[in-house]
Length: 300
Image (cartoon, rainbow, N blue to C red; front, top):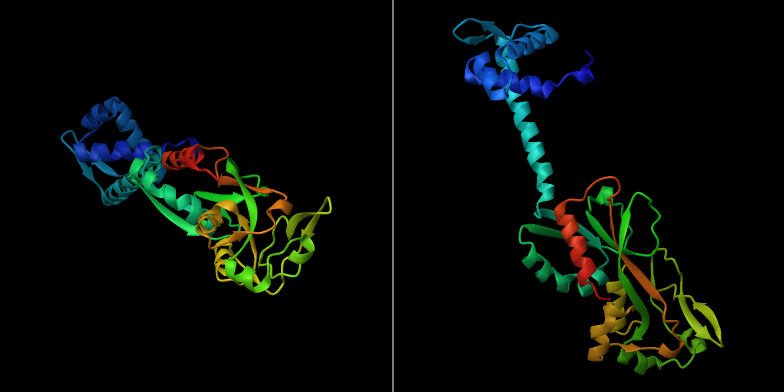
């Protein structure tokens, strides 16, 4: 019999039952086997191990020193297997921790307002939310779900589209008082334009000019690593920013930021996706619950 054909945990379980119940007959009843089948199993186990595990008598089983050691290790191993199975089956319950990786802008302006509703629906789920605009490796970061924009390069990931968000150029009233509001794309090029320090699908700001589409480069001297940092720089008058509309809606409504050159804005959008490792196997119930919740609740 090959090593792969041996049900080692099954052998351990029968042996442990025989020891704890005091004999082959009681173990057979507990394991739904015949006493002879239990006896033969223990004999095969001893032959395979090359050691006598029990001294048999008509009254009871007596463990040898090797049998005592094997029994103690078997009990520990069987407990570990049971714990592993309990841990895995907990994935079918809407409980446990979900690690979410998202940009600061989406996390603060879209996700955060939804958290109370989700935790009220699923009180046994805990959330660990990490904000970064950097594209991360979900396996390396141990993230269950990432919320990202743009095309995916990793084919081992699965996506669910959450929606689209329009891009808007904004500046603070103070900045516009000091530098003037641009009336054309040519005037826009004279202003401080805050950029991102990481590679983007579109490097620059696409605009309409003279019936054509042009891309205005950002100012090399002012770049940031995330959208929230860009928004704060725009709020303090450091320059103009091009951000998703949901990230600056409250600021525009309150007069803290002002849209710039809306009539020349292409009206292009960013598509937002929930990204997760889900090919070839079932998702834990807690992750499925979050994805379904986001699909129903996210409004960009």
